[in-house]
Image (tube, rainbow, N blue to C red; front, side, top):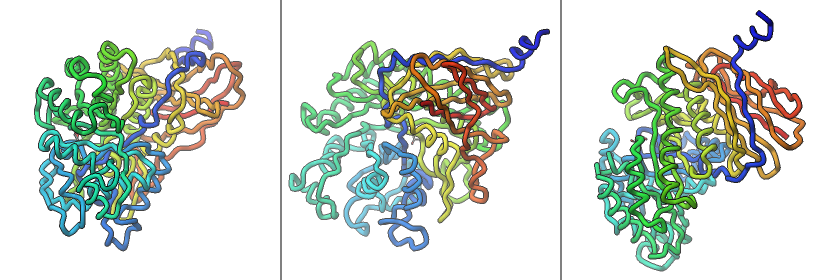
Length: 506
Ligand code: AHR
């Protein structure tokens, strides 16, 4: 056998062609958004420790270490207060002097007492501290249209226009926050009220009408609840029955879960479980493509955004501390989910214009974990930081000829990628090799243009199960990548097994 044939058999070859001449869509920075719910230790302990806390540095109770780390990540938008909790939330319970706030039972998550010390003002202050846009989810399941309309007035209307803005003024905040993004309910087919789509559509139209003026002169971005599976009939009904002038976004949810009855441990897993998770993560492509196809039919001008406002890996909860609901570790498996999902979103930038990882701190696939005064950054944090070069850059469409990662008689694409060009003319290419054991060779054809320097970062580790812990916070962190070499207008590189690489080409 010739040496050439031997090489062909041992090393997996993938080819990427970048269509630099077909660049047209901008990758919205909001694809890199996050989600924070009153669930477990996401808000209390994660973002907020109370203004009387003397051991954890804070401003009005908001953790400064968490804010600094998230600012570095450049998080563009944060969704709140749920999730399922949103459809139980009455915003008026949580404004004004803290001693007067209504204490409620969090019936969505663990029946814990919720003292409402973190409410609208605190959330919007948090967003200002992080330079992130707020995205509020209104209560459709257990609330009223009036309550939602009044929430809009409380946060957005000019001072002095009603008793609501007087309350805001008395709370110490005179100028409006001008919140643009509003979700109308959450998972209305499930925890948000088990509604049929036709029932939801009527509810949506009522809310969307009364939350703003008839012609929406305020420019609210109203997001309707879309499906959480490949139920494209739900999306079709929304698109057919809601006038497009009343609809700015359709939200979908997709979690990479092996089996809802047997989710498996977050850091103790075998390759079979890993493979199943990755297969579930790749399902995002059909979820997005299927919804885009339906939306294109009714909205060829792409006015309405597809908003993936919950996504991520979901494993068994590791309840070490009381109240740690949906707390899980975050390993290289999660880095793979993050890298491949963000590539899918980038490649659908024409329609996917917001996404929110579930959830930001201490819940599900978090970028940050906290334990009292300690804070660690997860592998997912590092992927999101490596990828933030794509924010607001122009998508460069790619064609990918890819090898397979084969396991147990089944297979998925071994490599996935996306590319963009930023306002300084810098090209960034993000690549993921999900194969658990095989390196993958990739040849990238850069098309036209003259490029003469390529640098990069890589996130890799010895074991798929590797994660950062409070004792060892830097087990997984990005390193410089020097393995990319030019050959004419092509770049050739070797992606290590289960790794994420982001290249910068100029
Ligand atoms: O993110 C956790 C939960 O998952 C959310 O509250 C809900 O919307 C979804 O089912």
